[in-house]
Structure formats: C-alpha cells, structure tokens
Image (cartoon, rainbow, N blue to C red):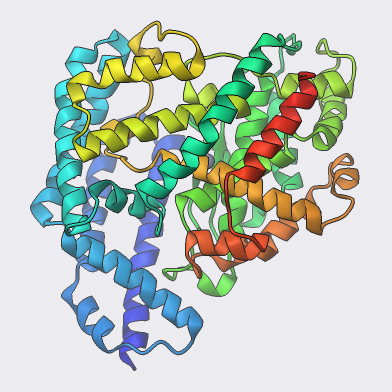
Length: 489
Ligand code: ZN
C-alpha cells in the first residue's frame, strides 16, 4: 500500500464516523425521546473525541509528506486533507476546548436572554465568545487577517475585503428597491386554514418534483428545517403552519436544494474528503436557486396554484397571477429568517459589517446593540422595537459562527449567476416549469456543478458552471426586474 492509499483508507473511516455523528444530530432534532438528551450528549461527546483524535493524528503529517496523488481527483483529495489538518494543528487544543465549552453554555444563555429581552444579561457571554474567536482567528491567520481566517472556514479562498467590496456595491440598489417596493403597497395574501395532511402530501410532491431521491433520503418534521448527511443518506426536515402553507412548501424546496446537491455528487466521491458540497456559499446557491429563482418563478407558481387549488379548494386568490404576487409578497419586518428576497441580503450585509468590526477589534461588544439599531434604521427605514427583533434574534454568534453570515448572500449572488447561465443555455425552461417540470433546470445544475462536490474551489466551480466570473450584477438585475414587474415600478 502506498502512503496515498493508507491516508485515503484512514480518511474514509473518519468520514464515515463523521456521518454517524451527523446522523445522531438528525435523530436528536426529529425522533429522539426527550429523556435521552443527557445520554445523547455523552454519546456525541464520545464520538467527537474519537473524531478529534483522528483529525489530529500525527500519522496524517507523515502520509501527507510522502503521498503522491494518482490524478487530479487525488490532488483535490490531498488539498482537502491538508487544509483540514493545517487548521486543526494551528489551533491549540486548550483553545479549541475552551471555545467548545463556552459556546455550548452561550447558546442557553442567549436563548434565556432572548426570552427575557435581556441584552445586558447576554453581553458578558458574547464578549467571551468574541474574545475566543479573535484568538482563534489570529492563530489560524498566522499574521494575516483574523476575520479572513474565520471566513475561510466556511468559504475557502474568500476574504472579508472581497465580500465587503461586493456588499458595498449591492447595498444602495437594494435599499432603493426596498423603499420603492414598500411604497407601492402589498398584494393580497392567502386566507383560510391549510390542513397538515394536505400540506405534507403536497410538500412530498414538491420534493419529488425538485428531484429529491427518496431511495437515499426521507423527510421528517423539526422546529427548524435542515438538511443532514451526504452520499447515500441525505435527510431533510420541514415544518407545518396551518395558516401559512408557503412556510412548509418553500422550506422544503430550500432543503431539497441542499440535499439534491449532496445526492448529486459523483457516487465515487462518497465518504472521501471531496464528497461534500464545495462551501456554505455554494450550498446556499443551490437551495436559494431551487427556492427562489425556480420555485418562486411565475412559471412554476402557475403550476403550484393549480395543485394548491386541487388540494385545498378556494383560498381567496382567483388566478395564477394573483398567486404569483402572493408568493412574492414583500413585507417590512425585523427578522432575517422571515425576510423576502428583497430584504434578505440587507439583513446579512449588516451582520457581516458588525461581526467583521467585532473580530477586527474596531467595535466593542458594549456598543454592538446601538450599532445594530442605527444600521437597521438606515437600511430598513424603521427602528428596532425590542432586542428579540434586533441583536438577540440570531443564534449564530452564541455558537461562535463568525464568518458564516456572509455565505448566505454569497449563495444568493452565486444563484443569480447560475440561473442567468442556465436560462441562456436551456431553451423553453418556463414552458416546462409551468407544467411542474423543473428537471431541465435541476439536471443542468447537477451536471454543471453538483456532481463535482469539492473537486474545485468554491468560486472556481461556480465560474466553470456559469462560463463567467461570478459577480453581484446578475442577482441585482434579477431582483430589480422581478419585483419591478410585480410592483409596477
Ligand atoms: Zn440553506
């Protein structure tokens, strides 16, 4: 056996154990009995310590020193292993443990503070998390920019400066679109109750339409929808609200986008370092394009209107055009996770600027709430009414997820580019989507992008799929055209 083969065999078991850990997490959010929580924490902890020992095993350095990749795919495998090994060896074990300990406590403290609208009760803990993440960023950056090092965890090759340049170009056009749309008045929404049984039947049909492979997946209910796993076991969850069926349907389509990406990766790559999506941003480009550019298109909502009328009868909207406007209703609001396509990126951009300033040491945790509220007023035109609608709304920072937020908008930007390329490549897309057939679109995405997994770097795989370098232009053009049309701007 060569060093390369030994390394890949070792890595395969690590990947398999990683999948087991993920499945324990899935179980915990879906079917685990409540009384099992304590034991589950111990089970996951035990598995995590095995995984940590494997990921930092000194034999990896020896193998990497002599391994010869047989081909370009092998080169990509070694690149991924090198990356992950360098990362784990740069962060001292003491710091990694302290971050795990503090962020695990911080989540409970954040949840309690949010319930009581108690910012002062949360800030000392947040300060601890920020200090630890600054230390981790500095250790990873080795003299470079700590925030870039944290971003690189989620979006390899991307920097804070590149994101800032992109976001600064987007913000004025989005702010202008937001105020023009809100001034034009809101279209009619749905009325009535939508039984759980009917929603679940239609949500399963939507998952099938968007290409979800039921033979290698399943759908369950959870408080927060998510997709979990890769290779031959990729599961999704959704949720049901009986007065808002779009919540269920579009959460499902979004998670199918994530899951179809994992299921679409070449079978040979399963349980190898390149056998997963290229980055959080590229992942989000799949879920967002499935959900928004395809799922909320005029063509597809025309079909969905017919199916919803068959399943639920009258719900107060007379025709497909009214339904299209209801699906794409823009409303002012405080909460990122409830935001429409026009507002969503503005939420992300302010979090990016604030967290980058915190990690760079340019913003003190004590000034975070006023910085948040000032920025919210500037970009959204209203004042934050209470902390749970402002600084306390997201779980990310208590988890220590600094550098994660920008990947949401990066995903939207990539989706804008991919769908532009898709539409110029595939003729008659809307004719098919109007009949409930999105296979030409999902097939194009699978063939151009999904099947590669992490073979290429994130920006590279998007550029290869599109045939041009990704930029924010196509997303902004799409948003202005779509909402300009709906709102008669
Ligand atoms: Zn997502």
